[in-house]
Image 1: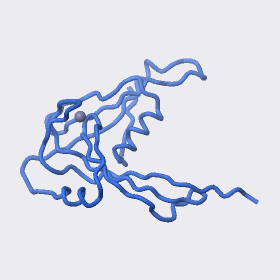
Image 2 (image 1 turned 90 degrees about the horizontal axis):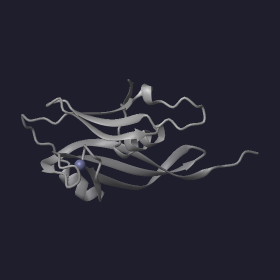
Image 3 (image 1 turned 90 degrees about the vertical axis):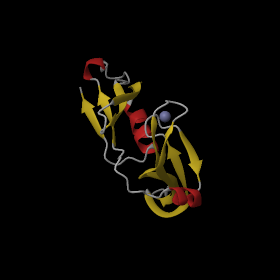
Amino acid sequence: MGMIIYGTKTLTKFKGYFGDKEECPCCHKTYKKAYVKYTTWFHLDEIPLFPVKSTYYKMCPICGDSIEVNGKQAKSEMISIEEAETQQLETYAKHILANKPKGIMSVDTSYEFWVKDMVTNEEICIATNLDKDTVKRMKKERGLKNFKIINI
Ligand SMILES: [Zn+2]
């Protein structure tokens, strides 16, 4: 008889950029905030059965600094206004192969996390010397699905 494993797992989903552009108190970049939905599912043997909690994070799309907002508040703020000015950001990691450690047992911390403003072409480095798990965690925090790691 196999062991039944149950518990909760949190899934994240990027919902879009909303509101006015505001300067971030941490990185001082001025962008619309990203809204990311966090849903905690009860799961049994790795199969999500039903959601137990959902909440939103209103996040600086550059450095990831965020505050938690409840669903009601998030939904009232997540209203798209048609405007000429668009915000298009691409988030990705770079894997600096030249810095990759040689030993098998050593942790590869040669990843960097980047955001590129597709309108201005500005490329912003968020963090360096990361391992792959940290990159995955940062990607998850931002609710990103399509995410590329560029080998350099
Ligand atoms: Zn920021």
